[in-house]
Length: 395
Image (tube, rainbow, N blue to C red; front, side, top):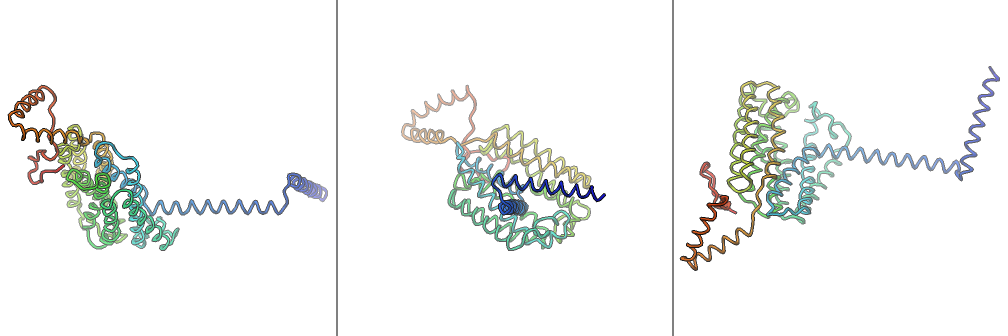
């Protein structure tokens, strides 16, 4: 027994001696090895720390929700572009929107730490779980908010920057505290969601026109069935968190489902308006109507049978509606043609200068147009007969 332990100890010493000679032969010393291990540990700690804070910033920003906001803003930019899209300006608009949206979502979590700690759905967020401090989160939110607003102001225009800053204030300092005061917070939140596409339109065109309100209106009406379904499914969680949601004061769910159904129906005319005002082609009018009838059917099903399963089905339908609606607008969009405007102005001048000749020319043009494809009038003269309460849009 003693001989066996002695042999094992002797072999271990020989192995260590050989390893030491190997390192000496390669030019390493024991001090070099200790420095190398310390350096590796520092690098590992730095990578771990970077990964930790990157995850915290990602969750504070509600990155997926912020990317949806960016998508609506980018769609608004493309729709507001006259002809060709400026990709550089589009990219800068999306970056600025992402920064401001991240700031607003971070401030929302800063103000709702105690509420989030009481809800199963939010208890693992960075602030209630203690993975990041409140001053650190405030510094992050302030820096990205100011940076995003400044980027939009310098690289696009002040109108877009003003809309971004106003939306940040509305979300963080009006909507967020209102969630604990009154159920009207859902409607205020719908306004917040409707502003980003208007921001994108303003960044591209430099102004706000009636045509630019189609997508914001769709987002406003869409959010109500979307959030009513969510509030109905998670009302126990919202009650535990101390939030005054509309569904909590509606035990039967009848009023909640009625709000969802009513606002789903409000989406139906938007496809026609987009076509009639020259924003999209007639194909979009058809596609939008079919899509809206589908989400309205799920809302009606929820109204008839107010269960979690029906609410979940309406929620999933709302998730499908928005990307399909925006994609349809982009695919079927109609860009303004400045040459048509110039030709119309020139023909108007000629008709005033030479009335007799203009009648002959007009008669020939009418005959030629009757043989070919009919053209729609400019946006400023589009008919709004089915919706007489709406003002005539301007170019």
